[in-house]
Length: 374
Image (tube, rainbow, N blue to C red):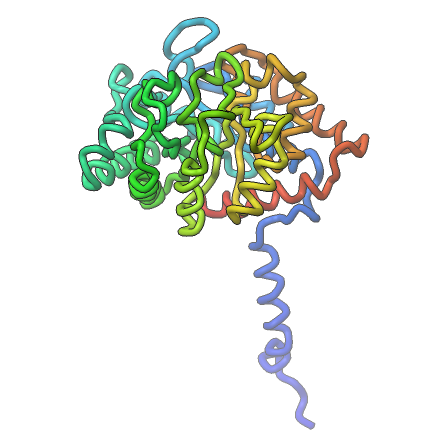
């Protein structure tokens, strides 16, 4: 037999070398990730400041607690002032670049940019704005497509990768203070809501921005605002409000879905949607077939804080099936909110109130979604 030359010898190792290269490029799975990192990725928080540095509380959360995402606001609700995080395109682009520079795992950088009365990047700080969802949907698909494209390009150009939009609540109560009265719903027709939301979300995606359908299972009939209390939609909600979710999920449209702090005794006689396993796991995941990332609405809202302790709300939300807990940290500011929530979740796992496997499920969903970030 002829002796092997180095070239022939290497042929036997190339498949192994290729395999090792692929393994190195794969994202870390939950099984190979420490608990602290996984918990941190399940949290998203707001903060104060138009710039950050290594000693900033939010940066410490990103570096030391592996915070998965941040949400930016133009106003500070507690202080009643403007300029909380956003003052100009140049400023916010720099801020978002700073935030990402401290993250070992890419951050979700989110904002509410629906159009109309709910858009944190607005004319007062030098940004292009778009009409409300109701106005653009009534004007036709071209207007919806244009608004979605402008919104997506505006966000991506300034360092955002997640828009808490489109709203897919059906406008069943035009006087609903949080939805209909503000023009946030596309239409009273579930089919129109579905079509306009699909176009808007598609334009966000084309711009490199993730979309988030809200507020499951439907906020359009509520007579009160969940910022101020817990809306009871038991007698006003109908199955028609699930149509946009069912059809958009079937088309694989949603990047994320946000739960609403809504009580419906027919769906769950005990807990509001955000804290309900019957609604999140039973209805959204099992019945509607959604296996993507689920994020809560702001856990600081009075709909939650008035009725549940922080520990109880966190436990129930994760048990229910939520993957990301959102703390806007704006209605009431707490610089330690991430530290506190992280410690609560870790202790729940340590005490066996939550399983590590439950945390791993959410972590894996979140990382699969983050692979889409450019």
